[in-house]
Image (cartoon, rainbow, N blue to C red):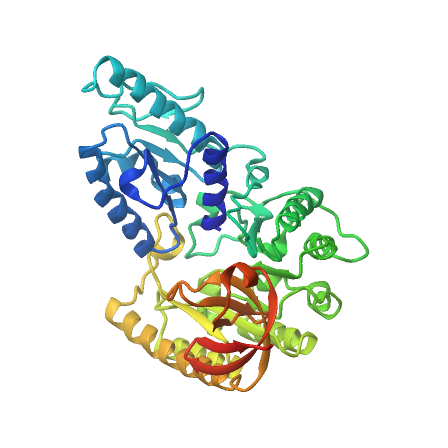
Length: 459
């Protein structure tokens, strides 16, 4: 989701006459889009921004800014952590970032023409925009904004873009006890179906073959705003509408919630062939007691039942999940329930995280916090189990023929190409980047190393 939000901001800079650069030392503005789901992500963002301050020694005009969830939750306190920071912009203000940065840069350039040593004085960039108490031009905008969900709609298309993320909603109403997202992203707000379809159509015209629909709880899209039609939820209506877009061959979505997995969505996998045979379906824990403490409104057997329904609807379905280990009060028995569920469901992959305290969340104040040593032991044990499952599943694909969408050069070896099966498994191949990027091709799987497959194009 942050990647999609960043793309929207980048598009606005490009339209405003700026050029994107991969080299920090060449940039006039450096913006870090932040995540607050885990403390590690926040610390990484703070560390990165701290190191980048060195560029101001030679280029005094450079604008530094934080965007996203950490910016939303921490606000002005970030200026105390990062002295060279200029701008803090929250999750409902992405569409304003370009204007703020451009204004600061223009002011600095004008002032430097008169006196190169002159620092930026404290002025507001726009009405409703608050300056920090320091009065040194440090600017914060973390306010709520009506219809902000409708501003994430533009893309930066560089060459042939095989896949694209499409934001269909913002916010979350669930209030899980460990999660800061409702505070940083606000309440659920969905975009109208015609607007989403129009965005997908533009992407298809530019050569995109696959879209991933994004939402904090994507399958609850529109539940408070749009009506059911013929018993179908707004989300299923949206899937059907996107399915009709000519040129789009694959549709993915992330991340759904068990309470939004109704029969109409399960059934959609039986008659919408463009829906990929993969769902990312966060379980969080296999223990009913821990699920209750997490404020997850389902039992483990309900989660399992949905997975089994989905596999019945689509025989080749791959399921990946999120799991938190070391949640407050988690006993060995609770952890074993999670292990048992992982072994029972045989996930194709699991993203396993040690519980991390989040500011102003109920779980952070709970008694029974688990020692870091225990969290790490449980994390490593579950990673080992999941690794064995994934390795075995991928090895079973050796000798089979798979259809992949080629997405371009591999991230780890630019001399080779990468693609994904409909089950979202990565396949590395050799071939011509210009000719194959964006194409759906058949590949014979020849080898597997853990989570990556290697194949040869069928000629």
